[in-house]
Length: 168
Image (cartoon, rainbow, N blue to C red; front, side, top):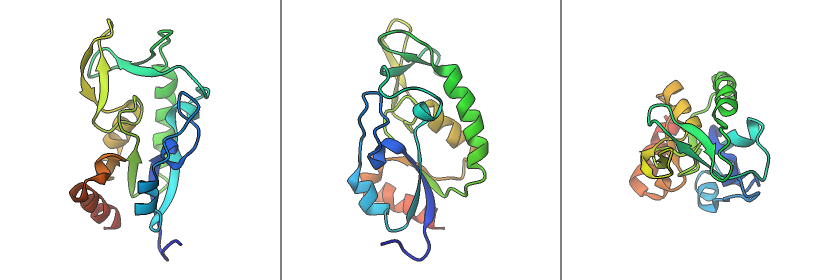
C-alpha cells in the first residue's frame, strides 16, 4: 500500500523485474521494492532498450579513455556509444520535467553503474572503474539529486542518508 504522498524515483528497469537486460533477463531486486515500495512512484528506465538496442543483445563494456569511454559490444566490437549518447541528451531534457527526487541504478552496468563500472583498454585489459554513461550524465546534469545503486543501498548508513535526502 502506498503512503498518501509518494515520491518519484528513477530506477534501472531491470531492478523492477523487467526483461530488458542483454541476455533477455532481469535483475529483480525485491529488497529495493520492499524498502522503497511504500513511498516510491517508480520511473523505470533502461537506457539500452530506450535508445533502440534489442533484447537480447550482445554484452557491452566501456572501452578507452576514462574521460570519454566508448560503449563497445564485447563479442562483435560494435560501437554503440553514439546511439546511447543521442538518447541520453533527449532523456535528460525529459527528466527535467518529471520531478525525480532520486535514482536507483543497477550496479556495474556500462550505462547505469554509479561508481563501479569497469573500464577496459582497447586490448581488453581492465584499467579502472568509473560511472556508466547514463548514470554519469544524470549525476552531472542533476548534481543535487541523490543517486545510489541497489548494492550500496543495502548499507544502513548509505540507505539512511539516501532516504533523508529523497524525503527532504
